[in-house]
Length: 332
Image (spheres, rainbow, N blue to C red):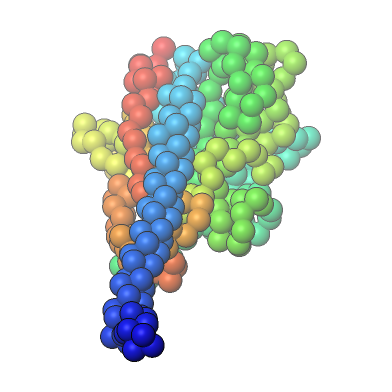
């Protein structure tokens, strides 16, 4: 009886136990891998959604106002760097010259507009003052040299009651001045979190198309697109010979001056369009191997890569070309 009872008491052998444990570990590892993969995929999808919101909707918001460049400047529709009240603000009044400049009024009381508030590009002198153009950028070229971002300053007369880029109400017939530039995002988590901001003048209570001074221009403005690593602008212009080309902002100023210095004197290239390009970045590190930190991006005439290659932020370029319909007429 005792022998029969003992023979019925059987359990796992050591090999069976090891096999069971191994199968359990495999299942746990597979489940963990699926869980981690789901998290990484979710991060990537969220990053894509953030970038699309910035690139598509934000850029469209900017383009809406750029299309109004030079609106209301009926007497001077031919746009260059000396067009009074010209829609692309490349030059401004100084103590010795307030003729043949784009930006005629003062900024505040008896203050001429600072160069760092005009349209500026790589190679121009940056400002040391807060809220003015500093060329901030998070990208480098193929030689690993940092490339400065651009600044675009525009002006137009409000065609109807509207809001400017800072959300302030503007009455029809009032002068609108807007400046698009990169600055530090104070809501960011690091000193390299830049945003494309827009700074606009304070609207007048009585519409004035050609005021003697504007207020509220030159501050931090409002953020239009968060997490922008680079902002680049090209001006499309046609010279006196009828040849059309795209120029960076500094290149255009050089070409315009060269035309005036030629013998015989020629007309400065006429600005007819603008190309803008932004490099949008996700808010958080996607930590996904599908994102190449060394990826290169083509931004109009520039081929660039991120300065920080130790993280895997998702980035995407958004570019657009805007025809300046209000700069295509003939002088009356």
